[in-house]
Length: 485
Image (tube, rainbow, N blue to C red; front, top):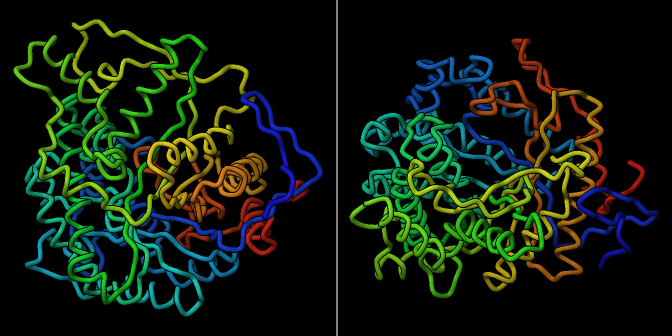
């Protein structure tokens, strides 16, 4: 049950009232990290090289502060301290990822690293000892370099190697891990990497490589799901899903062109991944297939640049999720944008949309109403699947009295709870990104998302709680979102 709203949200303002929102008894709170961003120990104890090791070492100019994740938060050595922090905050689960290169240095099954296996076993055992549930992401962007050398995600054979990797993971950790995420943010892997060249391995193949990557990702996920269900699920009795990142696309105006553009943005940006897995019919969204096919022909391609899913693949992928992990950070105003056919090939051109912020928004990074609309969109589009918010967070400069982050969490957690209670969406958990400041990919250490400050100038990587950590601790302990904390 829930009390009256702690606030009323509009696109322009946040207004608090005197009532706190109560958290349902079956709703859980956690925090998240990713291996490359926090572990460090980049070549410790037999770990192999991954694509972020290679990129940061060979092209430091591509990282905002020319930094690396070689040490990062040094969680490879400080994992016990980190679990103590989790216990202090009071989280009910911890979402972390396994480094493929740490347990399989070559990327293949010919060499299994016992020190890597022990590292994750120790973490899992210590979490359970402290009554914290492990939620494990099998892949969070750090592809082994030898796998990338074969073409990375544009090579469909990677789905076979990924299944081999997943089997090692299930064999070694599945007796204790009951929530698995196959892959984190396929759009970030495919569109941001191959479409825009923003992430490792810094490949730019817009409108072609991103779609090749997308099909491989979907097949990797499906193979892993079926592997777990066929060989491990009955004995290990866990659940397995995928984490998809999504914006909320708000029409810029009430004009039909902008409304249609916002629909396209959601269908092509988010439905690209959700539709094949969660819809009853499977396959890519119809609007995605038709637009890319038509634009490809107009560009003089002999066939659609969107590599098709064949009937047996559609059937194989459809329904392969016990739950949906949902990452959300941004809401955008979306309008129709007609690209000239002579413009370079790209996913943005295929969508035909323009994204911008509303100048009326006081802080464009704090638009909590967007996450509630997104959750309801998933409910309506895909028959109300089980959802865990697996990432949601606020970036700043790392200040300890992070009042904006507290405001962010008040707003977003409240909207998620309202989606669960008032709107009857099947959302059962919220994960703050992140428990501590870390290596934020190509932004390096220039932006901070942590509930805990990390002193990266100190050899000890000292962790210090921020105001947001104390706020989150209060919410978890008291099971409500107050208006005075």
